[in-house]
Image 1 (cartoon, rainbow, N blue to C red):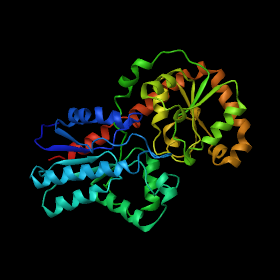
Image 2: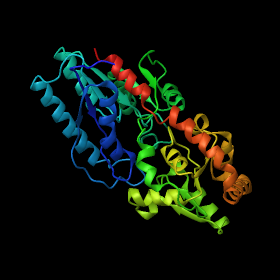
Image 3: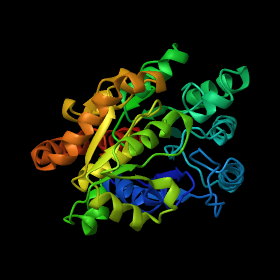
Image 4: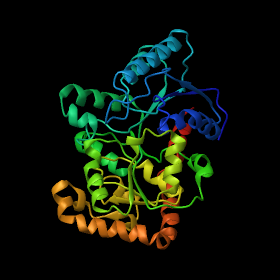
Length: 356
């Protein structure tokens, strides 16, 4: 590792306090600086509405205010001659059209920068919000492809997500795709204060209330298993510390997701010694041990769920009533996720190697 005079610019995603995006604003600059020994500057879009559009990850109006503010700052840096050869721009949400204007300015002004983008989702995922509402309209397909081409490095957290992208855009150039864990080394430290509490017979649904998360299955299980306390977290409007307290005292996190390119809530649960039960599909397939997965067809839709409802109920009852027998597997699963999916080593090394 060497000391560089170049700068890494983080073009961040807006920080919603109840999500990991707020943690990234706090920890990512420090983690990048520590690994690369480079100057790190965050280009923030300022304050935006905290309330997300129902069922979505962001506020669809506020996110464009945020990105427009970021673009103004980036353009001003170019106008003032502050962007230099070798500088690196990291977009923590690759679905940001300002990357097209960044590449436009860099190439026309002859500044040799590198750009990386972290992909979370897009219209290329038919189960995602964009995929459901916009679909394969030419404008969004071409926009996503253009953004991809603007990045020197397109970062994905799972092989599943890479395959999902390639299914729509099958002309990907070698070297432009990097599979990396998300930079969440701080999780253990952040959750330390919540560890070690007493477990209750609580089962959590930590996901957004959206069609691709199939909350109706969770509601039906709640009616079928009244001996347990089923909680849909988004209904509670929890602060982050309240969510972590609840997660720490729960025994199980349940998912019937039809859309998931990583699965952060499952990792949070395991750090707090809470079991997970997820379908054998999506990113879950490569991330989670057989112990914590059930056959995908059991919840591929409501019809299949009804046919397999008793099997799911039996699995939940076994896990809830025999928590102690899963403790060793919880620890094994947590370690595997920590080293393979929630550590930014590949991300940092890719950026470090590009700074010359």
